[in-house]
Image 1: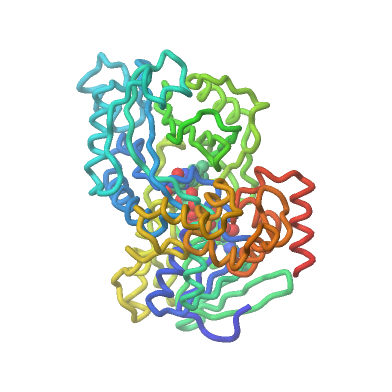
Image 2: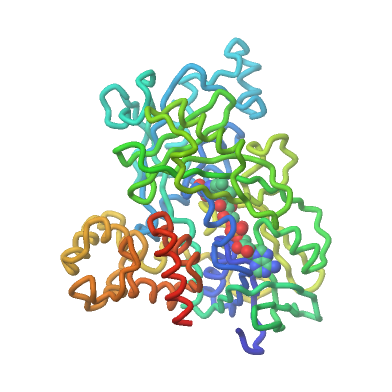
Length: 518
Ligand SMILES: Cc1cc2nc3c(=O)[nH]c(=O)nc-3n(C[C@H](O)[C@H](O)[C@H](O)COP(=O)(O)OP(=O)(O)OC[C@H]3O[C@@H](n4cnc5c(N)ncnc54)[C@H](O)[C@@H]3O)c2cc1C
């Protein structure tokens, strides 16, 4: 808990936007406090599809600003965190039934100029979209689009034989929950106070300051700050109306998205981009070495306090969609895990959930001490969003309005993208007891910091008890000491995804070990 100091900036919400802003602000020399009512990334920011992407689909909505910013950002982010993010190739099988969502501007334009297409998404138009995608965002590292013959290319292996042609393009993967934690860690290293399991229950203006009431398991506390940032994600409107008591005309649209996880369905490391006959798309992505991740859906979600859970309709939709493409025919019995999250989208009055804008809007309220509220956004644009937030706040805070985070590595990411393979080899050479999969997992989570967890260990037993799936006491200690983890769910479902591999009994042992330590 903080002392009685006045923060320059206080942030409500420990998702990617709150933690990204905390990092940027503390790097500019501001004193920053951040309160997260649960665990870091416990809400939307651990439930995404985990892509740093421009969003090929958004081109159909003519969202060129968003797509361009996100495309440029992919490579900036990849270079700052080549451990938790990596390039991925997306295989887009072609077939004649692919159709536009009738609501998109591209679809409306097409029905005017080429009415006989009847909403079909012709191959040449997909090629054109990919050409735009390749060139809109100054791509330097990632390879461009190519045509793929699915009858000979390994990428065809997972698909039904009726798919013979595809295009293949690039985007990047990112471990979303670890991205949040690494931003929080970096912010803390630069002086920010990150308070988890701390709820902001009230905030009121008092002269030039905010008086902010915080609630934890142990009681209430008040802090003061010169400016307040509302990065409460799905709770952004509730925070304005019930916590800050400020009227806002900006509305939020909550759109739930769900994913299913199955055992690994294909033997290559590429991802599939499946197009439906209603303009919607889903991905099937290699996941956590031995699994496949399939998603996502778009369903309106009324109340942020209602836990986001996959519905039966969403489950059938994803299974049917994937089964229309994959060789392996899935049933509900193949699902080993599901997760759902709620997109806090800026309400632009769009008709359907999938057509609501994915762009972000920052609203500054100056009826006294500054209040900045964040609406919408994507994992991919979090760093730019933080820069824009600081640009808006800088005049009141007396700090530079120039960004600094582009090109600055997150913890463990201080290596060139081209040296990732060498670092993994070096890790195994230094710790020969690591299996290749174990080394891969540690490197992908901790990057150049993996050696700090392994220390002087000469054998696996030097790392303490093994709870299963290579989760050792040494790693648990790191997560609790350096990564703000406090419970079994924090370590098994957010700092890692080892929850997919541990039995209920092993998970309970992890929980008991954590409790005994605290
Ligand atoms: C299904 C799905 C797929 C997606 N896929 C992608 C993708 O592939 N790529 C991409 O770029 N983006 C993707 N996104 C979008 C991205 O995940 C979100 O834009 C982003 O995570 C939102 O982050 P946030 O910080 O605004 O919200 P959140 O992560 O929800 O954080 C807000 C936090 O505020 C906390 N909070 C709320 N009220 C209080 C309070 N009073 N006191 C303290 N704490 C409080 C909450 O507990 C929460 O942790 C996806 C989203 C979804 C749902």
